[in-house]
Length: 154
Image 1 (tube, rainbow, N blue to C red):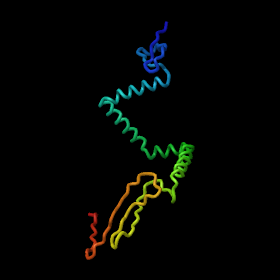
Image 2: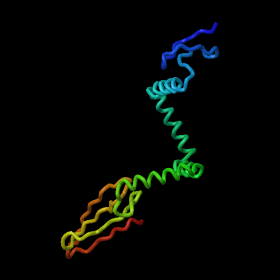
Image 3: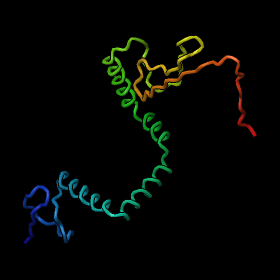
Image 4: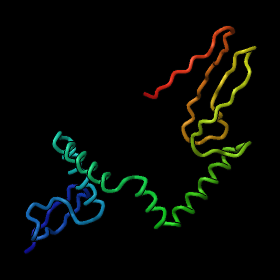
C-alpha cells in the first residue's frame, strides 16, 4: 500500500515516492519551481547563503566574461541577432526620429556662441536611446590672461 501526501503548493493529494522519505511537493513543474524558489529564499536570508552566492557568481563571471559570453551567444544564435535587429528598427520608427538615430552614448560636443567671448558646450542628444546625461558647459575667454597648460607626465 502506497502512502499519500498533500502537496504544499497545489494542495492536491499525491502518492509518495518511496525513495523520498520527506516529500512535501508533487512532481509537477509548477510545484517543483515553487519548492526551489522557497529554498533559495531561505538560503539567501542567511549571511552564509548570501556569501556563498556571491562567491559562486564571482567564479562564474571569471570563467565566462560577459563580453565573450554575449559574443558567443550571438554567434551561435543568429535568429536572436536578426530578431533583435528587427525589434530595434521597430522601436526606432516608433520614436519618429528626425535625424539618423544614435543607439549608443557619444561624446560629441557642440560649441555655440553665447555672448561675445563666451561659448556654451553641450552633448549632442538628438535621437539617442541609451544614457543621455546632459553636459552644459560655459567657456569664457578672459582678455589679458594667458592660458596655462599643466602636463601630467612625470
